[in-house]
Each structure stands twice: as structure tokens, then as C-alpha cells.
Picture 1 (cartoon, helix red, strand yellow):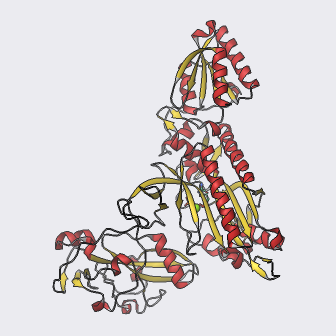
Picture 2 (cartoon, helix red, strand yellow):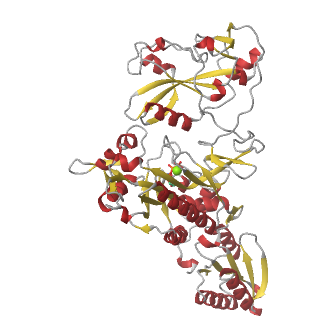
Picture 3 (cartoon, helix red, strand yellow):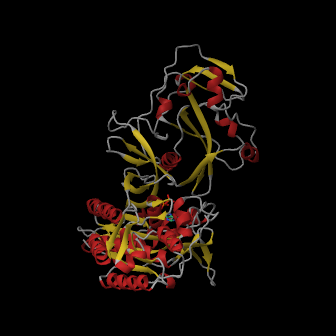
Length: 593
Ligand code: ATP
Ligand code: MG
């Protein structure tokens, strides 16, 4: 391919819309173009990268025994009604784009395909003899993300590889899950990515295995915690650790104190001379349920700990045996709208009386009370006095009506020691989630009544797994991991071209002739090569070559008359001046060892 025919449009300036390096570089180098919020065109160079990635993915899926298929993107709402997810995915902050057809029937644009595939499996896979089956597709997904950003990292339309497996037993599911884990490691490593597998949240289903693959990069939206003995890594949403010990509290008299202007743990501790680990803080939250009801919630934590939203939502949906959409702090306005008096925000104790909710318009009339183990393990502590600007010091659980049962609701943090090895410590890193594998169990097959006949002739719901890779996100994550100040440094396996031949001055006949000859030699050897034959200054061409990031460059310049060229590797800028035949053979050895 000739650059003059390549529709190469590079930008000198950093586009204002782009905050992170990979997004800036993909825009500047002419790989992508924004069409709307979270909506991007993949320009020809980008499409080649995507195809390189998908061909690696296809090879590895095939090796792992998965079958390629293509499912519809328009999903009848009935399917999502059957799984119970229609409401959660379309109402409120739901992420499914949805519409009505000319007959008034509701449809959704597929954000994920569990519903479609589970219903098909129920119709097509009747007997255990047909199992296991693993189906995958590579396709555009639609999600009306609340905050689309960072270009392809969080789009509203993006390319995903998603696979779904169906099994007659849990052991069979575990076998395929392990094979997919292996396939994912091979895919990311072949794509030139350093991706760390981490334990991931699997929702309220306790015990179900789920693992994410994280490309470590400062721009990552996820926080991951990795043990320094290398044996444990988890998304913070899921991570566990041993909290630091609380500072012991002397046996002072219990008393009620006036604490004006001390509504935060920080100001309270500073004024009273307390340590945050000696305080039980109580958060007042509102849980929004899948059936759209709202329930007020009190969560007790040790004052030096942070609440983990994901753990909280999971604990709550287990407790209530009902889907929880989210939990967020209650505002003064909201209590007023419920017709309630002001609540003692900033001074709430674990024993706040349900009576404060009496007469609430739509909220449940009593608090759901949850406590983190760091709080319940304290024998003596300070806490809120349930009245504005009042706190109680040196309390114990007995005097507050009994010690509640504790559970893990806190964020693990860097610096804490590990549960599996008290000598190992956690370090934190930011990560970009490029893949996710998940043992779903029978959640969807049971909800959708999708069944097969087992060996004993009885009907049983399938065991299921699902496995995603964000193809377009992966492409950008590769740039985030491989770039320098001058541009992209694509890993060779996914680069749009393997090599570029730059003719410094096409008006020089010797240069042009040697350039064309080198280009033909490489083409004939099966190298995907680009020839920069533009009538531009050499400096412009070198800058563009750096920017678009082709792994190998052969420069045909002044020495062309003697038959000499420069061979340059983009990633480390290593440059060798060589006779042209040696340059091409050396390049061939590097690309086709
Ligand atoms: P996230 O937590 O980043 O929102 P998710 O956990 O909802 O992602 P999955 O449902 O697990 O995503 O989707 C499988 C893969 O698709 C993810 O691992 C990620 O790589 C990719 N992906 C998800 N959402 C987007 C998006 N909005 N834009 C680009 N890629 C995405
Ligand atoms: Mg995920």
C-alpha cells in the first residue's frame, strides 16, 4: 500500500477532546474519528489493527474449541423480561438503548447477549450428549454509558468478542473456564500486551469464579491490588486484606459530648484527639431495588475504613434475595420530600431509631442495618449521638443493643497485609479491563427456564459460562501501553503494517527507484508494507512514520546512489546503515524468524 493512496490525515495539534495519550495519538495519527459522544469511526488504519486482533482472537477461540456465530443486535424485550433484566437495563440509569417498532413492540440494542443465547440454547440443545458447547461472536455492542470517555476505552458503540458456554455439569463448566483462561492469556500475550489476571466481582452469586484481565496503565479506570509475593491479585471491587489494627482505646467513662462543626471523621478526630480507628461511623444510604422500591440503610464501618459499594450491593441483594441497582447517600432534600424531619447527618450512631422514618412517603419504614467486621470487632469505640452535633465516647455494643454480625464491606487498600500470607503486602496499580471470564452457573438458564435432559432422563438447567474481550478497547489499551513522545509503537502482531519504506526525496531518481524496488521485494516476501511515496519534505514523512507507529522503517535517502539504506526499529529507535539487500534480509529475519 502506498501512503499517497492511504487517506492518511494526521494532526499536528493535540485535539481538545482527548485527555489520555492513547486517545490523543489515535486521533492525531488518523486511526479514529469522533462522530458523536462515545461513537467513533474506525478509519482504514484502525480497521487493519482491529482485524489483526480479531484474527488472533479467532485462532485462539478455535484452539479452545469455541464455535463462531453471529447473533442479532436487535433484542425483543420479551427475552429480557424472561431473565428479569429488562427493567434494570432500560429504566433510570439503565444502559440499554431501546426503541419501539412500527407495531409498538419494544426492542433493545444488544449490550450483551446472555438472553439471546440462553434462549437459543434451550431450543437447540436438548440432550446432555450435545454438551458442552461454546459459542462466540465478534460484534458491535451498544451501551448508553453514563460517562462515555477516553475514545474507544468507554464507547457507547464498541466491538466485543463474547462467548457463552453450556454444560451438563459444574465440572465441565470449570474445564471450559480453564481453557478460556489459557486462551485469554495467549491472546493478550500474542497482542503484545502485559495483561494481569485478577479476581473480579461476580455479583451476588457467592463463590462463582470470575476473573478480569487488566492492562496496567495509569489511565486505567479500575484499581487493582497485587500482593508483593505475586500470589494474589484482585480488582478493588472484590479484593480482601487484613485491615491495620485499631489503636486501642483506654477505659474512659462513657459520656455524651457536644461536637459542633465536627460532622466529618476528620474534624471530629482532630478536635477530640481521637484516632479514626477508634470511631464507628454510620453511613445513611438509600438502596434502589430492581422493582424500583427504595429502602433506607445504615452501614457501620470503622472510622478509618472506606465503604466498598460493590460488596455492599452484593451483601444487600443476598440479604433481601432481590436485585439491588445501587446505594447512595441520602440528601437533606430527599428526607424533606419524604415528609420527614431532619436526620442527624454527621452524628448518626448504630442505634438510630427506626422511629425517625415514621410517616415516610415511599421509603420502607425501618432501616436495613449492616456492619463491617472492622466495626463489630471493636470492644470500645466512639460514635454518633443520634442528635445534631452530639457524639458518644467510650461506648460498647452491649449498651447499643448488642453486637451486630459483621461482614466484609470495606475497601482493601495498598499497604495492608494479605489474607493468604500475613507477610505479603498489597500494592495498587491502575488497570484497563480488556477481558472478563465468568462462571455464571445456572443464573440465566434457571431464570429463562432453559433446560436439557440429563443422563438420568431428567430435565435440568444448563451450567453456563460467559467470556468477553473488549476488542476496540484492547486496541487502544495497546497504544496506552506502547507509545512515546513521538507517537505510537505498535506491537508487531497487531500493527496496521509491519514495515514502512520512506523515500526521503521522491524527486531523486535513485532514491525513488531503490524505494520502489525495496517495496516490491518486501511485498513479494509477504510483508505487509507501506511505501511513503508522498511529495512531502523528509521531515514530515519521518514525523508521520513515528506518529502512526509502524514497527520497522527503511529509509531511502542520500546514500541510495551507493545502494545503502537505514533500517530503524520504531520501539527502541535502533538504527543501522546497511546495503539495501542486507536491510531487507535482516528485516525478513526479524519479521519471519
Ligand atoms: P466496565 O466495568 O469497564 O464497564 P463491564 O464489566 O461492564 O466493563 P463486560 O460486560 O465484562 O464489561 O464486557 C466485556 C468487555 O467489553 C470488558 O472486559 C471490556 O473490555 C469491554 N467493554 C465493556 N464496556 C465497554 C465500553 N463501553 N467501551 C469499550 N469496551 C467496553
Ligand atoms: Mg466486566
